[in-house]
Amino acid sequence: MINLYTAWIGLLLGCLAGAIPGLFFYRNDWLGGYASWERRMIRLGHISFFGIGSLNLAFALTAQTLDLGTELQTTSILLLGAASMPVVCYLSAWNAVFRHLFFIPATCATLGIGLFAWRLLAT
Image 1 (spheres, helix red, strand yellow):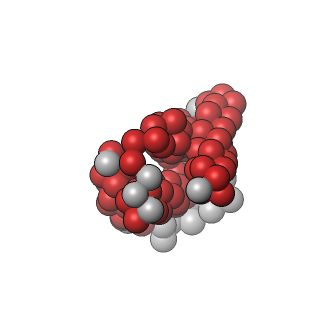
Image 2: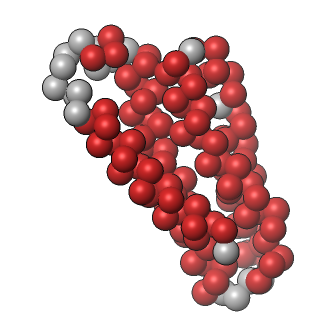
């Protein structure tokens, strides 16, 4: 299941996305300081790799454990779409105009989780 691969790739990228900025965290003025927009977006991008990875892992393992099969294609695609969150975060750090794209990963995650919960309650 592709969500399982997405989960582990997301978790690995979360480690890398934290290690690289971690080389510079000691500099108070790095990216405009701790409270700057750029630095906040980079931190959010870093942690979103872990969140989206964990979400995809939970989905893949739950679907496998309950033997839900291929009935969940829409949910799977939506949860993969939620993986656009780190991309939107890093683009927003680069240029704040990209903040208007946050509705894409937020909508994908919300609909994916909602559809999955609805499916689980229907069984």
